[in-house]
Length: 348
View 1: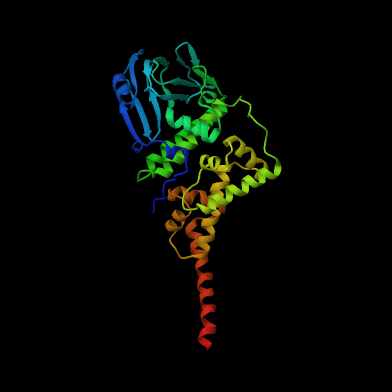
View 2: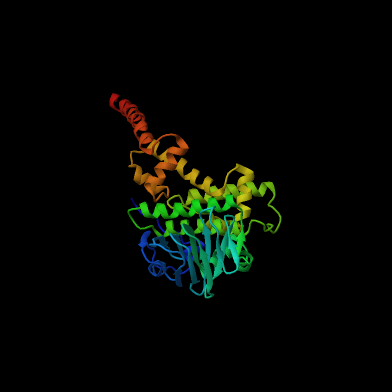
């Protein structure tokens, strides 16, 4: 399948890149080995309860972000430090276990947060599972300024734990697990454009978690301007149909914050911007499948869908049939149309 070009307009694409890596899973049978498996951290694990230790770590190192899921079988004391200039967000998975970060309890309704270069202590109980997201500070600052229209200090929590509510935390866990599962199932490394999309989605989710109780600054756009913004977004996506234009890029192009864009789309269309942008491209792909004999993978690539199986899943969910079925059903109609075009000429 043809790889889409990387978006030069994405805020994350403008930040310096490091080499992206595929998802990998490590299994450890010693607490120190588990600590060493986590890339980029300075940390020591002490096993506090008896019995053979087992730990797993599934991680993906992207350009500006390290996403991982860690599970450990025994109670641990962890002395941890994230690289200087980065920020760590910790999202516990299970609701029936409670950990601690320094003097603060990590229960099922909070996420943990620590800036890089500062040592902190984690106490995690037996059978513990936690998602971690470590974000490069420069990329995070660029994202917050260009997409959220805020300073980085407006986003970052002021405490080690942020109470977010169980439902919001569960949704974030689903999103992160989806990132790791998709990466693990993919047979090829993600393109730069795809990695930007994944990272922007994760940053948007983290921002929403940390800013739930913050009042949106400024007045809402007038109703005519809301319609104009939605129309401009559609036009921009169609003009760049060969790649998956994301919400961060639209925010930069339209000079609005992500939350303002969300309000506009919700008011005008009753749906989120990302869902609408994907739907527009799916409709475009369906029309092309009805009008051409090009293979499904070529049509998908032409409309910015880099993950063919996900394209097929989204297509079937929206239209109730597989892309290949649309292509097959339209072939008799195209053949008949061709015959009608030929017959008058033959008569002459």
